[in-house]
Each structure stands twice: as C-alpha cells, then as structure tokens.
Length: 251
Image 1 (cartoon, rainbow, N blue to C red):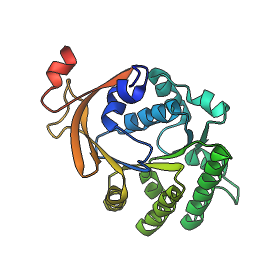
Image 2: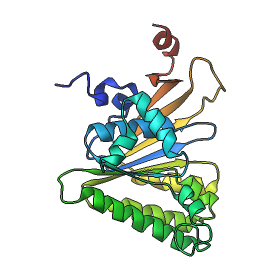
Image 3: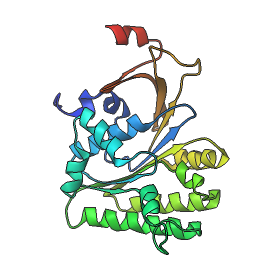
C-alpha cells in the first residue's frame, strides 16, 4: 500500500524511474542539446524523502540552483545541509578559492587533483554514514567537466572506478551524470552504462525543438528499456509515452 504523499509513486519522474535501494549504480547520459539536471534534482528529492544521507559533488550548477529547484519540488537542500544530512562539494568554487595555494583542487597534476577529490568524497561519505543504520548516496554532476579541466581518458576511467568501488559498502549508492560531447565522454558513458544497475539517457528531440515536448529520456534496467517524452514547466515535469503528448498536455 502506498501513500499519495510518497513522491516515488506520485511524482511523474520518480514513478517512471522506479529507483530501488538495490540500484547502487545509476548512470545518466546527457546528450547534445539536452539537460539532464531534472533527473538529478528529482533523485535528490527521493533520497531526502527516504531519509538517506547525500554527498553532492557539483561541477555544473551552483548550490543556489539546486536550492531554487529543490524548493519548487518540495525540499530544502540547505536545510538538509544544516542538519548534517547533506554535504556539498563544489570543486570549481574551491579552485577559485585555492588560487595562490599549493594545496586543494587547483593542481597541474591531474592525478593529484582526482586523488584529492576522491579522498574528500570518501571522507564525507564515512562522516555521513557514521554509526547509523542508514544509506548514503553520492551524486556527481557532471563528470564531463573533469575533461574540461584536462583530465585524460585513463584518469577518468580510474577515477570513476574508484567511485564505483565505494558501492562495495552496500549502504552506499552512486549516481554519475555525464554530458557526452567528445570521444572521452563517449568512452566514459559507455563504460558506466555497461556496469550500471540503472542507465538513464536524456536527449533532445530528433525532430528539433517543439512547443509541446521538451525532450525524451530512456530508462534501462534489467535488460528492459523504456522510452518517455517529457515537457518541462517552471514548477515541474510532465511525462508521457511517445505519441501521447497532445493528450497528456491538454487533458
């Protein structure tokens, strides 16, 4: 029996994603001209509803963005952070603060940068887990910005492997978002898709921009692939199967 207040059933996105506790590795592929951020913000909503702890590594958007979207979706990220339910790592902002320093994320040696980031992630997850009997989720949004910083394909694969190995602890799950814009992104995304329990792919419409449909997303799990169209509004998302857009938007 489920409650209408449970977003895992009542929310259009979460009810289609059907993320379960055993789904420890979730990969998200953001194709060209698409925006997968709505998947991330909805997963945060589910994790906080489930009373999970969260470590959010944000390269793509600032904390104010997540807070603003979260408010529209019914959760308060900064309040959760204040209550020690969420830890946020903002490497780009940290790099700005590290200018002139010999430590931190602003390093020429990319192996050292990735090692520092991984150790921070691991430390924060251990802090979040503590001695309690609860789950902790790691979200990285998004990996492609590491390529922008000069990280090569081997370093990317090594870093993602270390992050994925965190799931050896069955209390930890990992969500890795990756925008695909070059060959390195493609290789990383394909590797993540192969190992993920759930693979989500967000794309722009092949037919071009539409007033009725924002884009499409697919959910691949247990060798089953489901396809959805979606329409983004200021305060939420509507989902529907291909061919049903007019009916669902105007009913």
